[in-house]
Amino acid sequence: MTTRTVTVASKVGLHARPAATFTRAAAGAGLPVTIAVPGKPPVNAASVLAVMTLGVEHGQEVILAAEGDGADSALDTLVELLATDLDA
View (cartoon, rainbow, N blue to C red):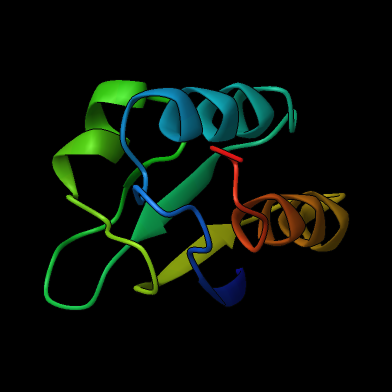
């Protein structure tokens, strides 16, 4: 399993538009991706409702995980996305 930790840059965290943008990218990765915050179990990164239930705020660290061919590349892309203010 490949993992990455990233700090969420969006000023509103992973709510509404940033969450939708992130989940579309996760769904397009072509392999199962999870996202987690410390103290909560990982959720399906392709589900906007699951991602929003994590309550991720600006500046909070999240852990992404994926397994399979292309996991490194997929996670690198998702990390880059989360490290950008998606609401700007």
